[in-house]
Length: 146
Length: 146
DNA sequence: CTTAACTGTAAGAATTATGATTACAGTACA
DNA sequence: TGTACTGTAATCATAATTCTTACAGTTAAG
Image (cartoon, rainbow over all chains, first blue to last red):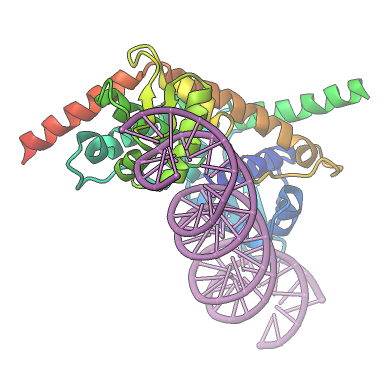
């Protein structure tokens, strides 16, 4: 899996952190620690899925277009990275005479697909807001420990 | 995630498919479609975790050292690939003044760790034998459809 | 109506992760 | 003692991921 899901969650949490404000791809990129082109690509996907609104031109950028208490990480994961949990490489060879070699691919594929369902079941429990809350709590803990 | 978990499951299913027989790294590699050195590396880990027994020298190779009905894919996953579900790249920067940038890493790390728990919860339901059964069933279906 | 600050998109380079190859020491059987 | 194995590591090749650069399209401001 690449990091687009991580960046999407980070960007949405950031937008939820500054409600009502536009953030440019430049600003988000600095916060995320990547480049503006990558942010624009990811925000484009989030826009197509209704999570953010875009404004082009001077003073433009991105703004949250959903309720951060309602949108779960599962929805974000599905938009960005569905099916990317399984490795690219496949074992076995369908043309082999051996049952195991011939059929392992289908079986593992099914297993990875179902395991992903369990994975996203957890993500359904988390919202953009809950991530933001964790971020804010996380700081309190740091301050206590210092 | 790389494919070591996939290869481990494939190799163990293969050994379960030929009970009582030794399989060399060469033979397993052909079945899996990779090279013997990679198989030996993976089987070394499986040996250290008690899943297989090794025999060096002439006529040597690998043989199952566990009950395929008892060993779950979760145990195999933990041995081979625990913690590899999350992407390598991290967003944010702990030195940033912005809360979100500074703390997102810890929060996402925690989320990926807990999501992996759900993932492995599914793998606990599958055993080496159940994978082998799926493989054998999978062939029946193919034959019916042809 | 022109300039400046944005997004949208894509191509290509750079980097990193993954997998393959090769090599060789160690072991065991015949 | 030779042959067929495992164990392990170093190096090379390939593929995935990320970064850079570029430029067309859009909008606000002057």
